[in-house]
Amino acid sequence: MKSYCALSGYNGRTYSNSYNIACPEPYFSIVTSALILGMPALTRQGMLPSGLLRAVLVQSCDKLSMKKPALYSSTVRSPSRRPAAATAGAVPAAPVARLSARARVRAIIGRHPRAVLAFAGMLLALLPMLAFQAMQEPPQEIAQEDIDAAVIHTLETKSLQSRAARAAESVRQSVVRVHGYSDDPMGPMDPRRPKVELKPAGVGSGVVIVDKGVILTNLHVVNGMKRVVITFFDGLESEADLISTHPENDLAVLRARIIPDDLPAATIGSSASLKPGDEVVAVGFPFGIGPSVSAGVVSGLNREFRAPDGKHVLTQLIQFDAAANPGNSGGPLVTMDGEVVGIVTAIYNPNETRTFIGIGFAATIAVAGNMVGISPF
Image 1 (cartoon, one colour):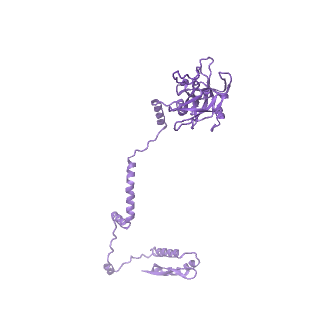
Image 2: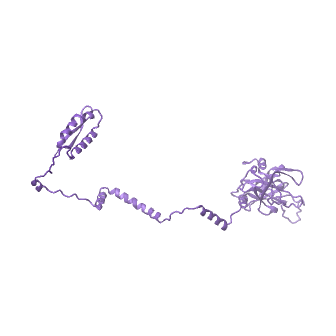
Image 3: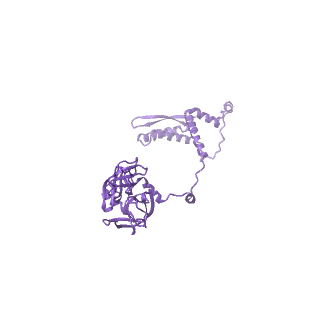
C-alpha cells in the first residue's frame, strides 16, 4: 500500500509548486519528517530548487521501498503466503503483447506520414546519382612513369613547331612590303610615246608599330621617292605618307592612307636584355620576295657601320647572322618571344655584289623609339 505526501517549494514568502509523491506506507513518516525538517529550509534559502527537491524525494522513496536483507536477525522467515481464496479468486495478469517489427514500422508511418513521405522522396532523388556513381569506373592513379611515357610518345609521333616558326608567326600580319616610285628618269613623257607603266625604284620592308597604320622602315628605302605604296599581309595596297625621318640611324616613319580591318601592331620588346648568342629571326621581303623568314643568333652588340655613301656612321647596332639581303631593309628583328627588338638596316660585304656573307646589322628598337616618341617606346 502506498500513501501520498505533499511537497511544497518555498520561494521566500509562501510555499508553492505543490507535488504529490507516492511513497510506501511504512516509509511515509520518514519522508514526511524530511519534508518538515530539512528540505523546506534548503528551498527557502535558495540552495535547493523545488524541482530538484521533488526528484530527490522520489528517488529516496524508491530506494527505501526495495527489500534489504536483515543485518542482525538470524531468524529464518518463511515466505509470505497469500490467502488461498484471494489467490484462487485473483484474475491472472494478461501477458504483455509485443509488437512485431513490421507493426512498429506501420505505427511510425501512421504517426509521421509527412516525414516518411519526405524521406522517401529524398531516397528516390538520390537513386539516379547512386546508380551513376556505381556505373563509373574508379579513377586510376597516374604515376610519373605514365607521364614520361606519354611525353616520349608525343615527341616520337608528332612534329612540334619550332621556336623560330612561332616567333615569325607572331609578327607575320604586322610585316609589310614597301615600294618606292621616283620620277621617270626620261623626263616628261612625250604624248606621242605609248604609255609605259613605271616600275618601283626601290623595294624594302616595314613593320606596323601602331594599329592605326603607322609603319617603321629604313630611310634609304623611301628616300627621294615621290610615291610610296604599302602592301599589307592580306594583299591590300595603300599609298603612304612620310611623316618622320631619322638620318642618323637610317630610319623613317610612314602612315598608310588605307589599312585592313583589325590590323595588328607588332609587340615591341627591349633590346637592353639581349645577349650574344640569343636566337633571333629576320622577317622581310628580300629582293621583293616574301615575306621570308631567316633564323640566326645575335653576334654582337653596340656595333658601328659606315653607310655606303660614306656620309653617315650608324651606331648602337645589333650584329646578327640571320640571312638578310637587299629588300630585308626595314624589316623586324624578332626574338623567340615574338618581340621586335631591332630594325634590319644593313648588311656587310666587302665586295660590291650586295649579297649576304653572314654579317647583318639592325638598329635597336630603343633608338627607333626615341625618334618616334610613341608609347611604349
